[in-house]
Length: 315
Image (cartoon, rainbow, N blue to C red; front, side, top):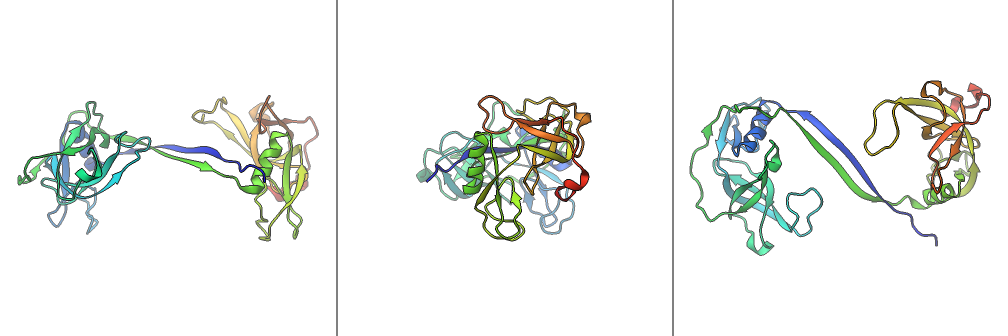
């Protein structure tokens, strides 16, 4: 039985957002070692603050300052911290109701083991040495032997010098991808400079890349068909934004290419021609780099352009 192919993949997107007056005050306050909440319409103090009342959905702006110590309301032990989490050693995720607040804040608790954590224990904020106006300005919580605070939350204007007005939150997903039997055969063939598809036994269409089943008829496909190596550009776009970790100068062209013998267009980069000379109907062929396991790009073959009627159904 052939070896099952797998590969580590990362999907990453830095999400940038503007902050309204409430979130701006909250994050700027953390930078200044001040925790702010907001008073809801029913008098509860919400921490972290929300811009709208969680019950009535009305806009709320009445900021108050709460304490930096609080009580654990619930917790879960994390024995294997992952990349980007608050602590590199095992820790507890805790919901902490800070003194003066009526809701709980989620963060990490630095504790030596799960037997030292309990609901109702007192904790306090450990501030980060370098603070920038982000939730990570709270490095974590740590156990606190002090009594439960009874101070009332104090009104706060929410005004600070040099307020934080926007944040960039990196969203990232690390996972292992297993392509399955059909695409594994396809990837192995590419390593031998061949492109194979699979033919549907019902409609007789050849799909590249193969999916293991016909998307039209819903039946399994297991007959391999070699296609290409030449094909036709059916449609394309010009890319003007340089992607992170991609060593390709912009602008460049990404196109849908109908390989000869295939009934489904695949997408690939077009090279060997100025970006503004790429056109629908352009005849192209795959180019492999030395030791490349898949085509680096497609380049013009020099043939006359394909007639529109020959590829219009694949656009």
